[in-house]
Image (cartoon, rainbow, N blue to C red; front, side):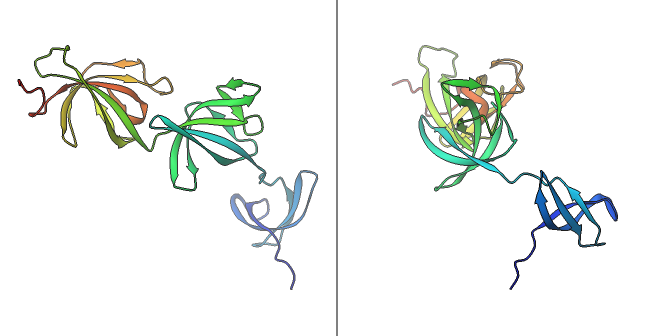
Length: 217
């Protein structure tokens, strides 16, 4: 039995110059491949997408701990701090954000390619922990309470809005965003209507609205 020819989807200059059709790969070499359109039989040369991938270490920070996984990065892929991608580990598929790109010899870059990068440092942003600083309803700050809530990375906190998470009820008064967050004009958000996603937040400052909090005794 003969081995079936490799097939690729590319535009055919004869019958479909603006649409991709299935082609059989007849020969490769010199950076180009000789291919034949299965729709009209036209044979021509084309440069096929590279299938080369580089296995790179990925360090993931999650809830104060870190672990190392690996990812296959396609040749020519551009990487940049702040970008997010899906990382498949033995336990789960998670969304991570690039926080640093290590090139080797302790060199770091804001942007680089798959060929240059050696270790991709990331932070898990699919489900995240958000630190809260709460103060009593009366506005005093000498009895503040710190706690942490678990929410999806895309959960949005809005200054001036009241949240109910678990047993906690609080009104957001200020948000401090992370250094790796993009798209925010200021690091501290404190005007009504200002908002940020949980994955971008370093800390939320809020007024506690829980009836059980701050008891007099």
